[in-house]
Length: 433
Image (cartoon, rainbow, N blue to C red; front, side, top):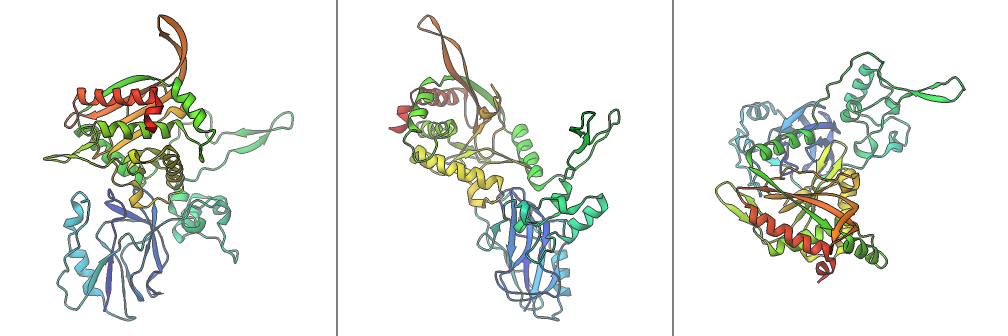
């Protein structure tokens, strides 16, 4: 009895996946738990495993190509079994359920009539693990063979790239299609007049050049979701300047005794979560024909990765101490950059924070991350003169800008939240109470 495995939805925003690498081919024998393929989603590169024992009878898409969620991925059954009818049925079946926006809890797919007993299974979270982090030194297997997908080898040959110089981001450092697409040749060292080496840039002076790169799944999703947010949700912005003198002193004292180093971003997350508890109208989201007011507080923190942006979530942030938030934030950020996050790590935030203070940005606005109603942009802490008690004195000042969805949050509601946040940051002892 043949088993049909469809392309799983590996993230809440995924509409299609790109086969980064196949680990099986037609005719291979597989067992339950064996790795079938690496799939590039909009959030990470994930592994898809088999549920069944048997022989691979059909592979639905070639390596490097995209396949919509819900379409035929692979068929596993008894050797020699005829699956032509199943393939034709899969081609004719329109995955209507997958074309709609993803629900919070996907419902089980109804079985389709078939001339023979067939079980259709859509892979889900349990058999999926995140791809291994970038390992430059492991591009060869123990027997000395180069670890690279056939597509990557062919692309490298076509582009004239020495594949031995490419660092792989697939499983165990395996070189895949994306690595060839993103590969940049290092500048060539040339001797100078005095014998020292100087770098020659790749571009030739006076020659126009450009390169079109295909969009990654992550960049496609960023473009779609933030485009929808910006042009659908009526944004307005509230900016406030905060005196961070006491926060600077408090952080210094805390780090003398804290088990992990507390960052200013940790203070911001804790203060925002505490302020949300006092202003539940901000901890809400637009839900089409209703507004969803969340009783829990899950703070999303924007993390920049090579291919774009991902927002892992600190869950129940208002109930956690600074040390716990700090440890969790560092772990999530590291796993985000290593592409090791699981869907549960980035789903469910009720409020978002984007912090560019470490880059010296003095002020900016952020686009709301649906389905949240607000996102707070946090800028750099800058020492500058202010007027205090009629005198000019130096102070550490930080600007924050709250982007609000006017369908959910009005100006007064957003302002009251910022006032509470400002009070907490200017007197951090309140955060610990």
